[in-house]
Length: 511
Image (tube, rainbow, N blue to C red; front, side, top):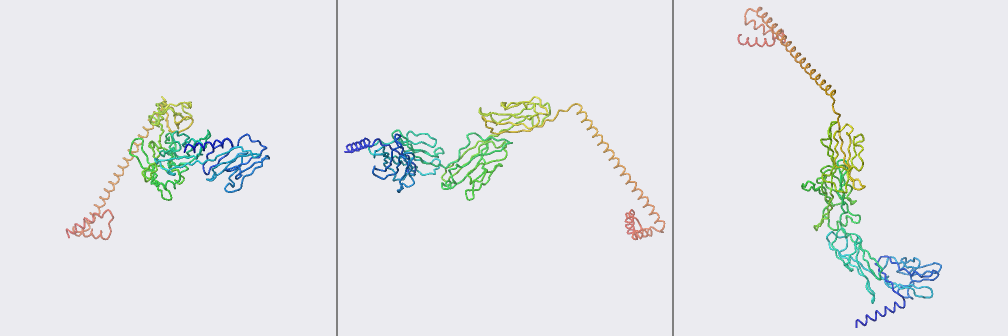
């Protein structure tokens, strides 16, 4: 019985095609725009009419031989129909728009039949997704009874075709799945496409090559959120932390650099900033770090990470290399010494990188050409003209990656005459110092003799004064008393105070 019914349907479809010509099938999504292209053999002097569902049904549009045209103003077609020559354009397709469209021309002559069929695409779970989530895509196309179904294939955001999809596809969400997926519906060798967007919460891709810096160039470590991702989406997915940490190339313990407070306003908190600072306000979704100048300790891996409460961590790693110039035996030399300059990244350069040296203009090597790519330069005997700023640039094809600079100081070599002059000046300075020392010692001796002579004079004066007192008195006791009286009456000078003191002691012992 089922076979009989199917045969009847096929017979009706064949009769329909024989009466009205081939049916052109067009697939579209709700909300999209579809164009029903008319055959190319229409005479410009003929009237053309478009109908919906049946020949005597609703007239959607017409065009006359004077190129005048009009579209229906009936709901729900108002402002959604237009003509391009004799082709019908339907904008913002609604659920009730799917069906049969008929094209007729002058003389009630049927020209073409179109079937606008619905294609439905869905994403489960709905966006946004976290990396690692299971992503299921489904594409279903309406099929007419008695007509063969279309072929369905999925195109990923990069344009790759999945041959095994057949309308349904399940993948693990990564940053590569982020973007527009296209369902390609092919019928009668004609393709119709339906597009659906998938959002995967992730960071912008890390640079493909390391970031290069030096002590004379700035350092920027890039990390950002893609333009289509907002902080509200991240918070809705229970983001817990945004952080930076550094893994030194030397293999030391990783260092925590910054952590982002997710409360309004978004604020960076520094742990061990290493002199780095955030580039801009994190609200602008730029999480990059920067510093005015690089250092030798900057080489290593910088990791920017988003941490979610369910344990999912999204991170990007930026490799930093430091270009440096090493001078042997140092940066201060004397004319005639050998100079060795090395420009390197502490490891052999890849084949796609090149070095270019730029000596000072007055240097003996100022004629170095731009294709001089040696990592090591040797000057057997430097001259004063080799002093100044040397620059080494790191290039990749035609792109300058970074540059390093070093300043050399070259002193002229001393001649025999200069050596004699220096020695003579040294001898004269030493003789002057000896003479000054002798004069100083002599002055000290004269001062000492003068002080001793003054003491002798004072002693003689004191003895004479004592004798005078003794002669004026009749006894020792009276002499002492007389002396004491003069002391109390302040009739003695300052040099006789010690004698007075002795006399008072004697007076007390011999009253």
